[in-house]
Image (tube, helix red, strand yellow):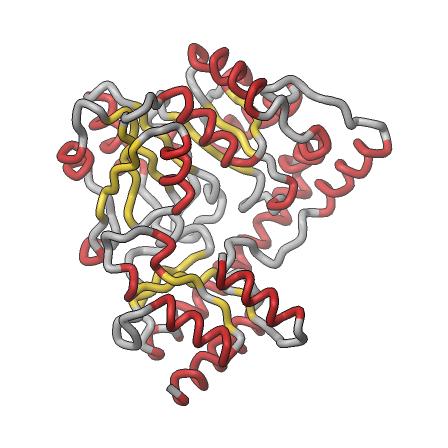
Length: 372
């Protein structure tokens, strides 16, 4: 975030900064969603909703699981939250007592570790191996599990690597967790953004999975701050009571807007955007290796590539600082994503700008490397 702040300061000073650091694409919220929000505001829909969200939106989310994935999710098992972060806070608060452990991946999304600590739990890293393409195995979970472990918190598609698990991989991991009496929490906020195979949900192979999702990434509603979770019916009353205490309710306006996220027009627009992201991904995959930035893993989802920059630097944070100051290109250093995988040699690039801007960023990186 210090690099983000510096990038914003440079832009405010008149410099042309290309932002490839923050996980927020350049696409606006789809027009039908904006129009639905405007109608709700004009109609005075500004009062609290139930803590678990409007019934109509919970039903719409359940309908999306049925139509997109062929999975039956009862609407009463859906809890709408203030972003996926709100969903994660609720689930961890319901599962973790002080001193309990939660398995998290390294590299992995940094806030996951902090949310575990927020409820006085202990995040225990699962060190992923670049030689194995960052893939997580059931054996790793089995070896890391102990008497204090309560859950494994995983993601597919993954941030920062962009890796996507197959249904059989998710099923095998879920089996290991279930055999130990724990909970599998699956972060699916990048679910629709996959490029080499159809999107799927962990619920299709492990119905007892606690699933987190969001309207931010695939649906293009980052600033609306709206997400959801899916949990067994028996857990929902506790989750709803905690939601009443933590948040009172999700944003009413955002919920009304999100009802349009599943409309045919919106879904057609989201598919066009997914195809554009695939083109951006292809451009970077074809050109980054020649610059000494090697893609690790199988980044088949989200909008990230995790790059081995060891041929160029042993200090990825310093490298990102110099690149920002000298070439005005913002990337994310590996230090954000863990400490056990030698993060000083890794960078994350987010392909969140159009092809012309990505091409310009690559040109600037070439110039920066030539001057180094």
